[in-house]
Image 1: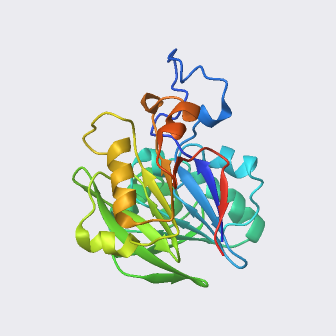
Image 2: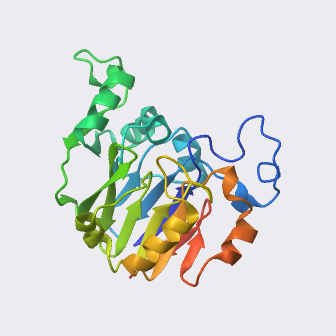
Image 3: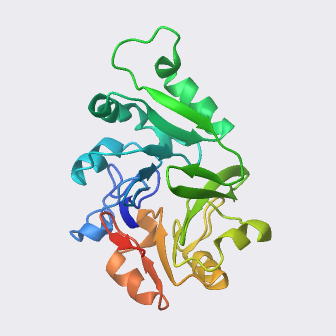
Length: 254
């Protein structure tokens, strides 16, 4: 399994429009963070988790020519706004895109991209097969996907465990029952917005403590704002086996 971090930033990305802070003005490419998304590739199957506003740019940058399925975590705009651009894959394959989402995301997609669900579709709109998922395992080709329900303040969000890879974005609470699904992952991806408290995201310290509790071999931090600080400085402060992720980082699992 090959995992590519397509984006590691929060809803506004980094740099933020009009911001003149030192992090937003940084020349270090690791401080340039598109909206959070990840590409998972195996020998037979390619999955993208979330299609944020930077989806088109991310696909072009990584030269992605094959996506078998889109997997959504929740319906916030920074995780869904690029959905229209699945059209390129429709054109290439002459087929539908398999999309996996819960009922909340289904409602968002049907509201924001209503034309893709119209009875009489305009030529060239996104073409998809929508699969409504619940908090129980399901298959995408050869991959078993195990949802992990977390809370983003009061909003239920799906993280996912796929083999020894676990991915949790937009969360500040995970129940003991759901933690059990993640425990012992070889690679854990976990959100941490910044160092100071936030109403709906883990802080860096909270994410570090959770990663250690869950006994992940390697943890990567995502969904970071400019308030996290410089990658080079913050990454050095972290315990062994925990690192800040960065856009275009690639990691592998046997």
